[in-house]
Length: 287
Image (cartoon, rainbow, N blue to C red; front, side, top):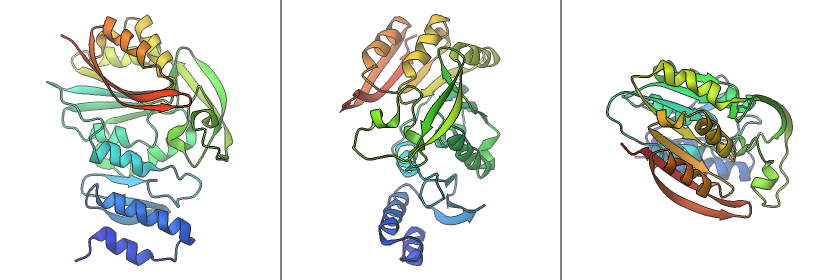
């Protein structure tokens, strides 16, 4: 008996894309099959992987200009449990670098998470996230999305945006510096808003004084200024869990910061790149 995903592979055959695109699509379907029981449908012209708990748009490619490999994000979050955590009591999650909204949906699906606050500065990526929230009505009510990024001050930036890689956009370095593969990326100009981290996070902390606060941060390099801003205003003492992807060898400075603010930290998945090391840091308040 063929699974739903295998049937989907056979149904599409070679009729949708050119051979190269079709092979990529089949590979993504095969990867999706390992993440759960999904069927492929179409909503508002976007191909959607529809599952028992979650629906994912913009993960298979072929949906117009916005075709970042969201399949990788699905695997990391929903298959490998990259952001799985457990706390005693209710929690609030601050999702800095919301991307297409998959992590926010994952957090919203956790029973002990009451609210998720997401921050994504690039409008095309933000619109993908809003679509994903729309097709996940069960969890969308928990999520409070914001179409701006966080930094050390309020500012407006004009940056190059690569529609093929929305998950790789940075507000501190162009994509050609982050991924020096020699490939020429087609980009367009986007004007984005960055707001002072402390001013945005303080109201969330004050609104949820009776709950644990967790931060997930994946911002392709602006993590250093974000956490510097939190420390400078004494807000790190109100944070219980930090789930961070660091870049440009910022790990040493961040680990030292977390240590002096009462966290126990674990660093893993270190990858050396031309621009410096990247990897994961998980920090928990040492009570």
